[in-house]
Image (cartoon, rainbow, N blue to C red; front, side):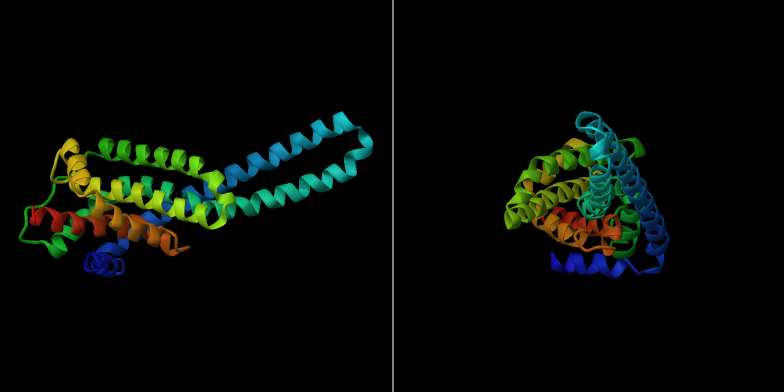
Length: 235
């Protein structure tokens, strides 16, 4: 497992990976910026609308204090979104992986397994469906886990394990679907769910590192190609 992770890490700076890295990181940054700016503008607008409503309810005398409160809330919302961006990174990288997964997997297979038959590219429609499904599932799981953030350490543990399960599931199935139909890929994941979950923990650790986590689609895909190869070569 650690050997597979080391191979995936070494590939990140290799010449064949650099073009894919630039494209995936660039797209991830654009998505994050759009998300942060869009949500920030929404919260600022809501703060303004709330100020107007409260002023109408309380009276003009409250205009000054309410304006200050709205300003403070706008700043807090902006800071909160920057921190929140760290939590949506798994969702963003899930979508990016669905676009570049096959390109990364093919480079990995050619580099480390040249004697083995090459996998078949997953149709982009299927990859996008899988990426959107995982992204939506990630949002749903995170919303369910959100209340536990009030319990400091427990909330962080729940988020980490949820991320490990979701990312392990997606990246393994995308790697496996290059050699198996979707149903068989899911069955293979379930048959080795312990190994896939542990591998997902390594990807979850990677995605928790700021800036570096922009390369998660490359690391996760290359890593799971190695994991899939190891599991199927012994089956």
